[in-house]
Length: 589
Image (cartoon, rainbow, N blue to C red; front, top):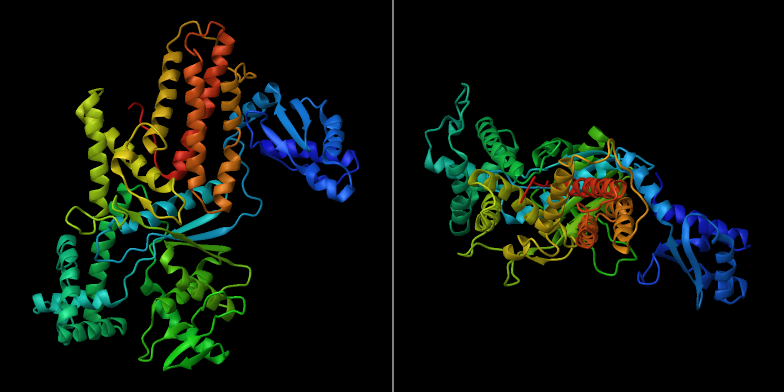
């Protein structure tokens, strides 16, 4: 179904046309003075220059043309030329009834259905997920869910880092610790063990130890580089070890992403793109795109309009080694071959902006992707502690993501138990749901590109712009619905939404009607915070209505049923939106 604002705009555009003015002057917007009206049209201002006529006269002409329409309760021309609009209660309630009868709240899928790959997560194997992985995971997950909800075919790819120097460091450290393992015997011809020679806990200790050693031991560092080279050139034992590293790491990653409510459709890795690199590089050389510069092989990607210098995209270093740019380009080759996407969205730290500018330009210039393919970069800011610096543990280390989830859930649990409103087991499960909502909403409610302060006390508050406040609103609605169901004298059948009697009811109805605007805006602008902003405003509108309206004490049973019907729609909208953000509401709090 059409957006409410589009229906109003069609009427005002026709009004301008019927008065002899250009149709596009009739665009309607939300009022910036809600104390005066609900919607407004400023087209008469622009029309004044076109038609050499006072804007108030143009506005008066249009108001005279459209004021009899049943959609409007009141349409007025106001100096110097605004058209102020209030909608009729009957029109709004009918619109909401139609929404309520539609499977997806009447939200239409995008006209052009696209195949979209979303590259998010991006952890390195053999390392635990830490707080630095949080934003990519939950922003990417919300964009995946939103895009899919709007009808697009979406492929979420974790894009694991599994092919760099960290592999060589782990292999060489393991070789020093357990030289007797068959993976290090060059003449070994048998089958390698099915079980990995390490646990995830041991693996996560091996890498930092090897990394620290490489910084002070040049011989070890050289051996690690050699091990990386051997792995990338097919050493049988090293490949078997690498597979063990992958299997152990991925199992642990999946477990921790599951705790965060994040899933991926494919678990592609840097190594998957390696086979495409030789032909890709050769083609760029043959077609004249790649040339040598200070021993390296590069592609120039600077453009005349650049305000800042954009260095060439490096394909191969002087020693022939590849870089992230090489792997990212080869991954685009693979994605084009396997999925032929219309759009690829990268959800990555905003400090990687220059890197992706180089990669995107190189891909377009060399024809790796088709000209019409959209390559988008959604760069996010840093999650900081109260000191304004990147979030750390109390001892200054980088906090594991599972510890962060546990910390915020424990804080919610303590808060629940202070009220003693439920048993321990229920409280623990409820705390997990509220904690996840607090964590995700606390992050997603910020504009992605901005840094923000991670404040547990603020995030778990049941008041203000927080996840728990949104959940509490849903739980409040559930409670009212449950009480209504227990009434013996309620009307049979489903009620219908009636025209609003009060200002707060009308405001709530209008806010519910704007869900499609919010979701489409969030998709187009790649801005999940727009969904957060919307459901916070919707929750505020509901709670104001709730406090001003005696729902359960209402004596008019038809009116009471209408309230319950409206509440049911509000709940559907809120639950749909939090589902897109990646969390859900408990039955009680």
